Image (cartoon, rainbow, N blue to C red; front, side, top):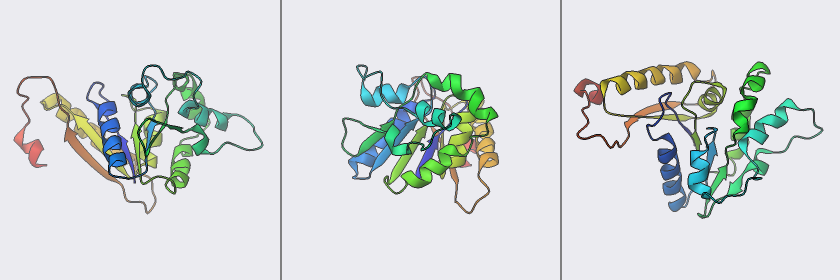
Length: 204
């Protein structure tokens, strides 16, 4: 199953949640993949460490090849690297994602990730997609491609309103196919003392 971790608000723990859910899946014996669509690359550094090589294949190269004329495109598996944990692989991020954004959007490549995940589903039991803190081309790609969406948020009214907006965005982004798509909102751990969570939101 493919899950996207999404919130337009930064600092809510998307990368931490993505990596920990993926680690749990791998520990349970499931073949697991993390795709890091955030140009900041927090999930990539978390899983590969600060001393990772700079010339690794990455998700930006995966997207970039669709902008070029080639006789044969590389398969998505050629942009995946192993991590130090058994059963847990990664398609790394790259700062190049920012440069490619407008080109990919203008060339209507929004379904490229979805098509790749349909093939990768044969190799992986669980796929987790980390997204940037913005509703942009990459986030929409992930929302269209994934079967489930997890929305982390802080326990305060402003974050609750932002999470509700994200929820509506996810519903609008669902592909018009027979694929089942599910969205879940969860409160992320915060360093704030005694967060307050409106009871009506908890019940919903």
